[in-house]
Length: 547
Ligand SMILES: [Zn+2]
Image 1 (cartoon, rainbow, N blue to C red):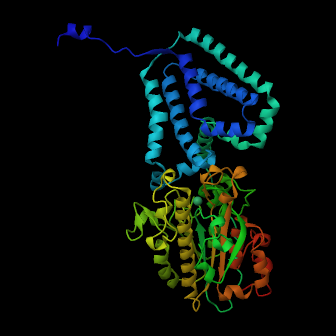
Image 2 (image 1 turned 90 degrees about the horizontal axis):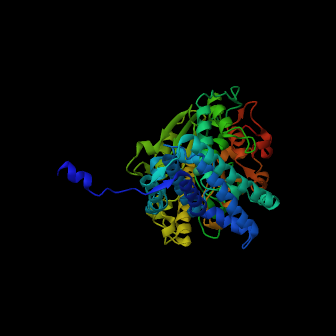
Image 3 (image 1 turned 120 degrees about the horizontal axis):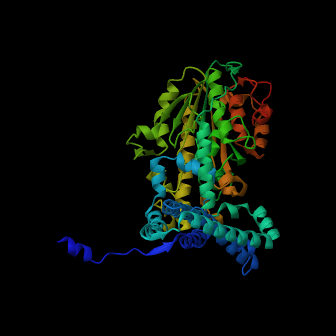
């Protein structure tokens, strides 16, 4: 082929578009296509047909257009628009399908998750959604040729366009300011679903917070802690703390659920607290919070990181404290104590691709208990009911409620199938907890055992159109915050407790705030950081506190 034929060959001309025009098209796409959840809520709250809804649409379109035009700088336009569209597509998938709100805690959850956990969310449905709503428009943007005016001319022109759009935004906002103010105050979830504004703001806030956390120096806590008195019999006190995962109280038959999901615990001499609330709605918040000295009101992620926690105070009291993890890690709670991750070990008897069923804890517990010499605390961090792959949390023997959803793609299952699979996970946790109690009971001649179980947060199974968990606390439904709390005290531990008083306590409101102080009380640890008012057992202890 000669040079001549090359030069005369027809050339593909890419369509060209002005930068401001493209900005307006991208803004329109984001407002209309990526905000299904937002508009559903807006229609709900503002009513349809309504003047306020039309104004809201015009106002948002003007605001998004102003932002897109403002960032449509030469060389940056394409990467920024593609980033906006891809993040909006990913966020809308979770918002529209699971009712997820992407705040800082949700970004932290995503960032701290394990590969196998994330894998369950990257389903064929997710890939399809991304291809259609993220990749396709991005490819179109990549293909077009953007016309930019000469620098100063562009600056003047864009400034005029941005100011005009902002003027429209301000006028429509002012025109209906009372309705908008009242609606956003009353329905804070409306603003929280504006896509991709909140996801991007949350991601930026997460990155800024993570940078600050790199220099955190952990402050010691309860260094004066010591065990007040040995048990009357001289046997070591052994407490197993089970940190549950995604178990909601609503599905515990111990708390009145119609299905028998707790057949084994029902036969144990346990106490079930019927009205217990979690600190957060996601592991990354709840777990460090429940082990911290802070109450839900006082807790922040930073405070949790910069202060030692329950397991450290126990260590200061010379109690052997160990953490077994069958989840996504201890969220820095177990940073300073003995720690084992079962997903890292990947024992093929219980694990597949670094995800294990909770039998992995039971397999080792007997040997661990047999080796106990002095006062000890073991934290068992379960995988529990972690979704959306509920069916992978229980062995076949616990597939009692059928048909059960056998995929992580919840959209392919009926609501009944999802609930069946979830209930099987609760049934299996019932078995795990009851087996822990049996193992402690079998060794009562050698140790004064007890077990305390609290789930980290609950789960939505389609109520109010929500799935999974992680809703901002202020709008979280009870399904995500009402958690099961089970206490088993062995013969010795029970001896000092007034049974009627404890029975009364089980009906009173309790929360994650109580874990820190209750465990210190159970181990008879004295320290100035112990607050008996938050120890659920304190007021039920008679004179015989040193059981
Ligand atoms: Zn969790």
